[in-house]
Structures are given as C-alpha cells and as structure tokens.
Amino acid sequence: MTGKESFRRRLFLYYFSIFILFTAVILAFQYNREKKIRIAALNTRLNDMAGLVDNYISVNSLPETGNYLMIDSIFNLIPVPDLRITIIAVDGSVLYDSSVEEWDKMENHLKRPEVGKSLFSPYGTAVRRSASTGKEYYYFSRYFNTYYVRLAEEYNINITGFLRREKIFLVFIAVVFAAVWALLALVTRRMGESITMLRDFAARVRRGEGNDPGIIFPRNEIGETGKEIVRIYNNLARNTAELTLQKEKLFRHLHVLNEGVAFLSPERKVTLSNNHFLVFLNAITGEHTIEPEGFIDHPSFAGVRTFIDRHQGPSARQGEIPSTEFHIEKSGRFFGVKCILFNDGSFEIVLTDITRTEQTKAMRQQMTSNIAHELKTPISSVRGYLETLMVNRDLDEDKKQYFLEKALAQSIRLTELISDIVTLNKLDETGSSFPFESVDVGSVIREVRDNLITAIKKKGISFDIEIEEGLTVTANRSLVVSVFQNLIENAVTYAGDKITITIRNIPGAAGYHTFSFADNGIGIPEEHQPRIFERFYRVDDGRSRKSGGTGLGLAIVKNAILLHKGEISVHTRPGGGTEFIFSLPA
Ligand code: ADP
Image 1 (cartoon, rainbow, N blue to C red):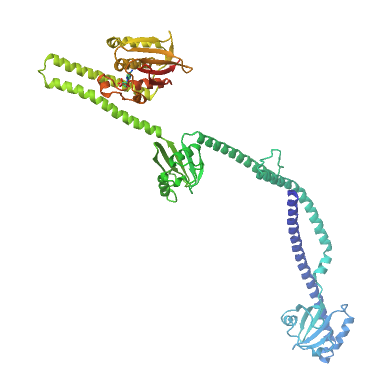
Image 2 (image 1 turned 180 degrees about the vertical axis):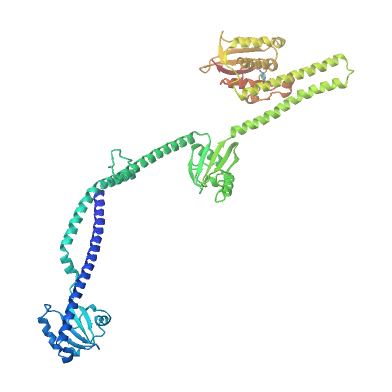
C-alpha cells in the first residue's frame, strides 16, 4: 500500500466515523422528538376516549346499576379494537376490564403508577409489559371523582418502525455523505501528494541519499511545510558538511603537529590522539604499544590523575578552564605535559618533547659558568698587577713597566675573550645578521696571513696554498676571515716551529667547495679530537692558556661553518700533524 492510499484510507475512516456519529445523533434527536409528538397525540386521543367512557358510564348510570359489563358495547362506537378499558374504584378494586373475564379477582390497582399519578394530575401514564398479555402497553389513567378510567393500548413507538419511516432521510444522508466524500477526496488528493513527497523525502534522508532536487511540492499548506523542511534539511546538511570539513582540518592539523595531543572523555577513555602522542608515550612508558588506551594509569601520569580528581565533577566552576603543567624525564629525554580540563569533564593532554630546550638550557648554564671561570683569571691578574703597583709605589721603573705590560696583556686577552664570546653568541642566536656575499677565498687567506706575518715569520712557518685562482664561496666575509684566522693562529700557536701550512681545495659535495687545511706539526691526540670543537675545550689546558688561547677558536670555526650549512671534521695526517676538512657553499 502506498503512502498516499494509506493516508486517504485513514482519512476516509475518520470521516466515516464522524459522519456515522453525526447521523446517529440526528436520528436520536429525531426519534425523541417523534416519540414526544406521538405520545402527546396518544395522550389527547386516550384522554378523549376516557371522557367518552366516563360519559357512557354517567349516561347509563353504571355506578348505580353496577352493570359495568355494558361498557363492552362501547367497542361498537370506537374504531380501536385493541383498546383495553379498565374501570377502577377509588379504593383500587377493578370494576371492569375489557380484556379480563374475571376482573373481580384482579389485584388492587391503586399501586399502578399511572393510577397513582392520575389522582393529582389531569391524567397519569406509564409504559410497561403486561403480566397478563406479555405485550408492552401504554397505560393511560384519568380520575373521575368516583372511579378511574384506565385505558391501555399496545405500545408500538419502536426504532425499527421509526427507521422505516425515516428511510428517505437515510437515503438523503447517504447521498450527502457520498457527495462530501467526493469533494473531500478531491481536496485531499493534492494534500496526499504532498504527504507522500514528504514521506519519500524522509525515507531518502534516512537512507543517506540526501535530498532529491527533482521534488517540487504542490502549492498548499503541507507543500509549503514540506518546502520549509527541505530548506531546513539543506541548511543542516550544509552545516554538517562544514563541520566535517573543519573536523577533518583539525585531524590533519593534529597529525602534523610536533606535539603529542590526546583528547579523553570524562571516563578517561581516549577519544582522539595523534601519532606523536603515541611515539612520546612509548618513550615515556618504555613500552611499545600501538594504542594509547589506559596510559593515564601509568605512574608517570600520576600528576594528571591528581589534577583531574581534584577538578572534575560538580565542583568545577563554569567558564573557567583549569589546566596543569609538569615535566617528565625519561632516559635523558624531557617531556612537557600539559593537561587542560573542559567544562563537560573531558580533557586534553599535550606532550611536548623539550629535550632540546632542556639541553640548550643546560648548555647555557654550563657556558655561563665557563665564561665566569674564564673571565676570573685575567680580571684577577689585572687586579693583582694594579694592586702591586699601588702598594709598592717605590718600585723601579723597569718593574713598573713590567707589571703594566702584564696588565695590558691580560686586558687584551679579556678583550679577545669577550669578542670571541660575542661572536659565538651572534652565531647561536641568528644567522640573519650575517649577510652573505661572494667571497674570494684566496684573497681572504692572503689577508689573514699578512695580518699574522710577524708571528709566522718568528716561528719560521711556510705556506703551501693551492686554491684555484678566483675561487669564490657564497658566505659572510668576516666569518670566512674568522675561520682562516683561527685555523692559522692555532697552527702558529700549537703546531710547532718551522712547520708548513697547506691549504687546498679538494673534490667534495655538489654545490659546495671543500677545503683541506693541514699542518705537519705536533698534531692533536686522537682521544681529544671528538671534543676539540667544544667551547672552552683545550688539549693542554695550562700550555694553551699560557699561549693566550680562549678555547673558543675552534668552536667559532665550527659554528661559522654550520651557519653556512657546511661541514667540518678533524683528523691526524698520515705523516703527522693536523688536517681540518670543511666545506662552504659555492
Ligand atoms: P684556542 O682558542 O684556545 O686556541 P681552540 O678551540 O682554537 O682554542 O683550540 C683548542 C685546542 O686544540 C687548543 O688548546 C690546542 O691544544 C688544540 N689545537 C688546535 N689547533 C691545533 C693545531 N693546528 N695543532 C695542534 N693542536 C691544535
């Protein structure tokens, strides 16, 4: 059965029931009215008849003669053969009854309702089944001073007779019903169409097929409602799509985040998490799971549990988003844990790998204490010399000169130290303050060598420079100068006398120029080589300090190379001496 048919069938049933009810009410009303009219007519007729009987009794002086049997002859005068006439004495005894032979044996009739009523009213009536005939009778009684005349007639005001008489009315009602139904069917056909469309639309939506743009609702109230529903559905569908898109974006964003993020329900079940969360979780717990489920029970997350226990539940204040933060350390790695509790009792945990930050922090602390340590020596030396000069005013000029020169040398060393620290800091902070340009490597080497010529000559050092004529690197010139200056200074200071410094460009990675900087001096013992680029690291601390080294030279070299995205390594040459190999962008 289609939707339209079932709708109309139901409508027909409703309509039919209402019509039947309506007809029944009208008939009941009609029936009552007719009954009343007929009873009134009956009463008039029986009243007249009672008057006739009374007249007959008076004319024939029946109370005096007591010959009530004469009343039988009345039936010749009236055209009502079934009429039953009873004459009842004031005391209730029956004086005559047209239907009963031996009326003198009949029971007292004063208790009969119609008789009782007629004593105080013009007449009394009652309807009941006769004990003697078994039929239903209409009893009519009238009081005439010395007796009652009671008349009884078969009571035949019944429904069947009524309906038979109302046949025309019933036919009329049926015709009206059919006509109204035809009209109603016509009107509801269009409504039925709208309802069917609405039903089809609902079924399509339920099946997830979406709206059919081909559906055009008829122009009636249900059609308008249908259109409105479709409009609301379309809006909803658009919003859902938008929401799905946003959710998708959020998921993608979560997966590219460097932080590990997990969302948990108020029951502490993970509802959403990203890959990083799982990776960090495995590092923290030391277990290799592929599901974050149940991680909250791990001892490392006790802080989260305490926080949630304290803030979750009805005591949580609306509008406030409580959060907590702490660190977890596991096998040298550091993780920041942040927990944010939402109003609905759900919460978010963000894990951040802060190992690098922590290491940098440790390095900075180390660096600061190293700097303080390095500064202490020259400062206390200068102070010592100056105090000696102040206290011993009578020192001879040569001695005074000696202390002044010493103090000067230490202050120069301080300046160098500070300048090295500043350079390294600059390298650490940002490379953007070092503009890049095309730098002619050969000219830089010659410039540095010329600057240091006095020391070079003093040590009898010779150079073997095999750099292609006009070879350039894309770099910051002052940093390239710094690289070669530190390397040459180191060779001059530490490698020994009469050595040869060989500087060549050698084959290497594409896009870079690779250089070899070597000397044939005393070399750097292999056990020191891995740490040689660390800040303030010296091979022979005492000797190195004495020779004015800050321990920062090679750290500056390495950082300068790294800033250019180049590489640097150190090793011992086969014949002895040190060789640095490094690259700079072409
Ligand atoms: P500094 O600034 O004090 O010279 P560096 O970081 O430049 O410190 O050098 C670190 C250590 O490496 C020096 O103390 C020195 O012992 C050693 N060194 C550097 N270059 C050479 C070299 N060419 N030959 C031998 N030893 C060297």
